[in-house]
Length: 60
Image 1 (cartoon, rainbow, N blue to C red):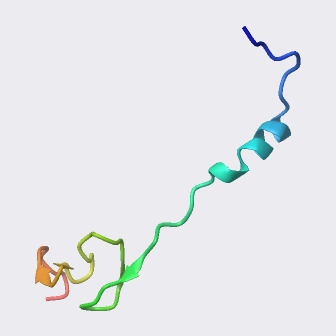
Image 2: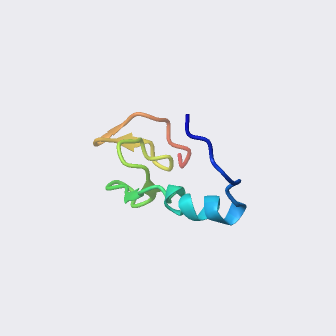
């Protein structure tokens, strides 16, 4: 069984994990109101998804 000869330092472990960072979510513009929303989700400001209202809007 392979066992490390020496302990891996904090900086060496951090260098190995540099590509595992979280990226910002991709946001798209709502075609109805223009607000930023997650793709394939109902718009939080107007409540429209695929051209029909699925959530009660808070603007009324």
